[in-house]
Every structure is written in C-alpha cells, then in structure tokens.
Amino acid sequence: MKLGRFMLLAALALASSAPTILAQETRSTIGGIVQDPTGAVIAGASVVVTNSETNVSVSLTSNDSGRYEANLLLPGVYRIEAKAVGFKTNVRDGVTLQTSTRLQLNLSLTVGSQAESITVTGETSALETDAATSGRVLDNRSIMDLPVMGNSAMLLVKYAPGVQSSGVNNYMALHSNLGASDYSTGGAVGGNEWSIDGVSNNGNRRRAAYLPYSDTLQEFKVETSNFDASVGHTTGVSVQMISKSGTNQLHGTLTEQHWQQRWNGTPFFTKQNYYRRIAAAEAGGNSSLANQLRNEPKQSSGRSNNWGASVGGPVVIPGLYNGKDKLFFFFSYNGFKDSKSEEPNNVNITVPTMANREGDFSSLLNLPNASRFIIYDPLTVRTDPDKRANFVRTPFPGNIIP
Image 1 (cartoon, rainbow, N blue to C red):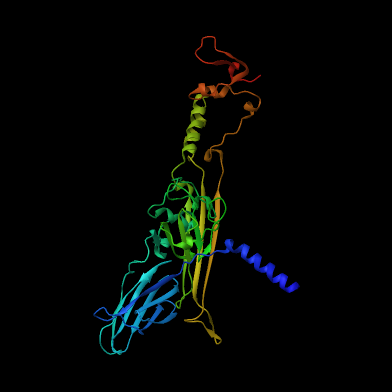
Image 2: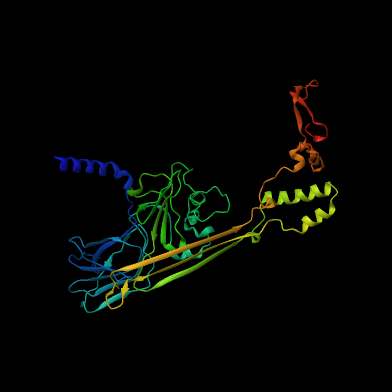
C-alpha cells in the first residue's frame, strides 16, 4: 500500500514537472530515395552514413519505396555510401550537415559491379527542401573569425536577416546577458527562445540564461519565422546552439581578446565634462589649471583581457583503452581580467565642492549658459503680475543659499 502510494505520487510529480523539462531537438536528418538511372526506386539497397570526423556510422536499408533516412545526426561533414546488387557503389563525400536540418539527398546508382564505385567529393551543403524557415546558420568559422565584445557568440545573432536590435553600443561584460539578449523580430512581440544541445537556455525577464564562450560552440542556427513544432511556444527569435565535441583528431584553440579604453572613441558625456572643466577654469581666471587640463587625456586609462583555451580528441589511456571511433572528450577554459579606473572625468558624475556644501553656488554663474544654474528661493513662488508666465520666483542673491 505504501509503495503503491509512493509510486503514484512520484508519477504525478514527474507529470507536473514535464513542461519545465521540455527539450528541443537540434540534431539533424539525412534522407532521400535510392534510384536507378531511369528514376525507378531501388528497394533493399544498403546505405551507410558516416561522420567523417568521428567515423561513427549509421547503417540503413532502403524500404519498398526506395527511401532511406538517418536521424539524430550531429552537425558536421558526412560520407554517404549506397550499394545494391547489380549496381556500382555510389559514394557522396564532403556533405555538410547543419544544425537542426532535414537534408534531402537522393542517390542514383549506375548499372555495374559493386566492386566499382562512383565517388563525388568536395560537395557543398545540399539545399534543405523539407522546411521553409527563415534565418541563417553561423558555422564555427564565422563564430571564431567575426569579432564580438566579450567573445560572446550570441551577439552574432544580430547579423541574421529579419533580426531587430535596439542599436545600443555599450560596453558588455563577460556575463552580461542583457546586452546579449537585446534583439527581437516581428516588432518585439513575444519573447525569444534559446537552447544549447537541445536543452532550454532561457533565463528570466526574456533573457538568455548562459552566454557560451565562442570557443565552445560548433555552430548555431537563428530562425525568425516558420518554426518547427518543437519551438512552437515562442513568437520571437529561435537560437539553437550546438557545442563542440571531440573527434578522432586531437585539436584545440587558444584565443586572446584585448580591449583598450584609450583606443576607443571618447563617450559624449566624458568629452562634455572634460571641456566643461576647462571652461570653468578659464571663467575663474585660472589659466594654468585650464592648460593643465588640456594636457590631460580626455578619458582615463583602462583595459581588459579575455582569454580562452579548448582541446578535444579521442579518449586514450595508454596500454588500457583507445577511444578512437568510439569515445571522445572536449574541454574548455575561459579567463577574464578587467582593469578600469572610475575617475570623475571618465563618467557622467559631479561631486559637490566644499563651497557647495556650505550653500555657495556662486561659481556656477561663471560657466557658459549661467542662466541654467541659477538657484531660486522656493518660498518666493508667486503669480506673475505681468502675465508672461504662470508663476515667478526670486533667485538667491549671488547664487548663495543662506
């Protein structure tokens, strides 16, 4: 009785949590029809789909309609080999499979011996004809070569057709998911959808939860309309990311991104404060201070370094185990050091002087547009007798609050 009640409660708990663990399929499919030179289908043909980087293969047999289909494939470069009795072997090499796609690839066999083969190599990715989505796929080369602030690959989403952004060009730190999620489609109606390896990457307040480092991504797909049913719960942008994995070849990357504050354009408010200080010094008759300020840089020094390393390959334990074609590993590390000063001339901040703290703001009357800095006595508000304004006030004499 107790065991049955426990199992029932466990089943109910699992069912109630199902909406929170929904996954999104980001693997792909290669399928098509095996046919002879006349276009007639060939049933019972042997088809082998092999990942060229890992040698992991899927063996298939075409059905009565001549169709074959290899599902749940990771993105990468593939080799497809088809053979049947009385026909030459057909090999399609260098077929590129992208994230979350259904690739239609028909195979035509020529009459002859199976010992003979026809190989097509160096082929570009075939057209995906089974879907009508709009957007783009960013491959690993685009992710690694295009510069992005903080090495956050998700900023590249803004390059996809149909994606809209606020256009705010602010400094983005390493884990600033607000700036990395600042895009939409269709007039920003509804939120976006992010996933990594099929697992939801949605955070709160319509932001992504985790920003993957560029070295760790194999590629990602950005869709702006006509989503697959697996992402039917969003009306915004769909971003499906695939992480890197190990292959039979040991490979890795080292990256370094250096950001230098003085190499960038001076922000508007920094320049405004810089020239305002010079004007105040000149208005106060302090020419030596004004000249000293002119020799100072407009903005303070600052820099940041963002570095990373990654390595992947087969799992090999000398003398015990060789994981080639079977078991692989991938490891990445990301470091970050930010060093920036926060001096008053670098940010839009003013601090009251000692005179200001005593109520003396007379120095403001020496600035350009001094009328903007006049301080009025709030106890003198009255109706304007000349009817030129609703109310008038009396300024404090000398801009000094008694």
